[in-house]
Length: 313
Image (cartoon, rainbow, N blue to C red; front, side):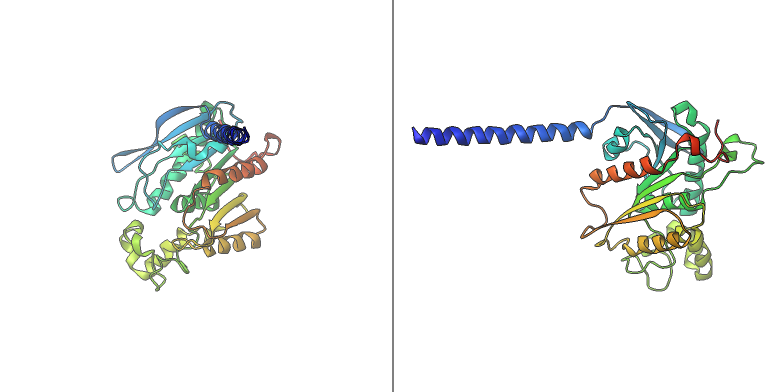
């Protein structure tokens, strides 16, 4: 009888563990599979005979704000159809996502890519009302080269060309908040990066990405400065959140630390979160995007405080 009771307790305990594990799995699965609708392949520009496109991913309960997501790695983009699971916390908070694809290096230079993603922001802002988004409440997110492009947008956004014949070109490319993973911020000083050639030149694996003039050092100094967010920090910098692993050897955390120092010197709102022991990407990044949602909740301005200088439809 005693043996049977022990077996029964073991079975009951085992069943309880299974139920608990199943419940946790179900909750996690539910959280990372929010309901959404998707509008695919909206063309925002053409370059070199190719359509450049983005998708619009709208949550079940939109909050009227949008997040621009550059589908980018190594300054390459395979298309706008990214898996929304990656940014489920943003959808859960009601953010409409604009997943932007761009041309890939080396066919497209990083300079051309930046010009195109600026145009994508202008296009999104011009048509924001069609997607239920306030054009004055746009943020941006991404990582690595995508983080670089996002900080370029955050530091070099402009108010548009008032004399442009295309109304999209007259729109602002400025953003109201940014949250990024391990961005490249200073191409002229790659520090401890494994991509550092040791002579102040461009990243070793990306010579062609910056065009034929990148191997000419005087020309590179101009290109590298133009394409480095750290040299464009100003009092217009929106609030920025950065997550970076301190074991990253491709883009060392010093890249983020230098940018934070420059932003603090300019009196801007910025926060760097160090992920100890993490390299260039980590599994729990999916969960860390909750921090991005928190950041946008705090820093995307309510309608009553929006800068009237930004254009809307």
